[in-house]
Image 1 (cartoon, rainbow, N blue to C red):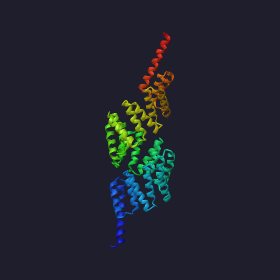
Image 2: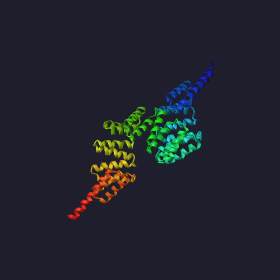
Image 3: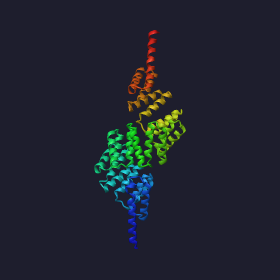
Length: 414
């Protein structure tokens, strides 16, 4: 057998392995390890098979092995620098690593090679969406992707996420539904639609979508995480704990899962475990405002007001638009006698969320205690108007009326 014939035969075998790794049963059913085995076989037969390196990069990316994924796609581009798919794949890895400028640069190169590569427009949109300074432009690129390819289910899902962030629930639901109709085996569409249902308090549909996502891909940590959130909201703490445990088992670096499991431990009285989980979440994501807020609540519950205050300060630094954190810090300032700082935080909380009854109630109580009775009554009335079943506000208003009665009694009879 000649060397030429042997090489051609190896190339044919490599192509067969490569093709088998992309068939529906592997790609659509999340059989990543089997796909990886076939790609490795292809590369053993043909070590210069550029497209196979790009595909293996995609598989490594799905396994969150981003450095290996980047190494493979770089090698693919070194073999063939005119493959749009390879630049798109590298852009995706850069996006995962939050190297947004590099992601955008590769998307542009991808589109120079293939102007109708719809997923590149989608990736530009996702990259801009994650860059808070320019996220309003993301919608244009999602629309471009869909205009080029009306079957681009990823673009419908991405646009749905954009609409969900903009609180345009009907638009978001329509896009998630379309993404699922185009590809009913894409688990992320079910996960994100489940998140939307959870936001609008349709727990049964949220649970159904999370269950469907887990059935499609039982190794995707997000499905368990968001189902855990649903169970937590429903008060089914044991089920929530089991799901957070599974999410962490599948992804030991899942910071949000540690944070939310810490909340469960806090609710069931396992304070030490709660603190450990919050600490681990902050170690993994030191810029997460929610975890600092949650740990601050725990420190306050444990009586460590100094650490609680530090965590509320950190939370506000990372997210200065969260009304609840100003409210909780305002309460803490009130409890340590810093009434001026407390009032300032209550004011800021109400400015951010004018429909938050708890703040009006506590600010009303603060006004009452510093002698500004008219403002106290106004705030207490507002708290009761926002929540007619708010017992604490009625109690504070009762104190106000009682003080006014005694004042009138003293003025009349003394």
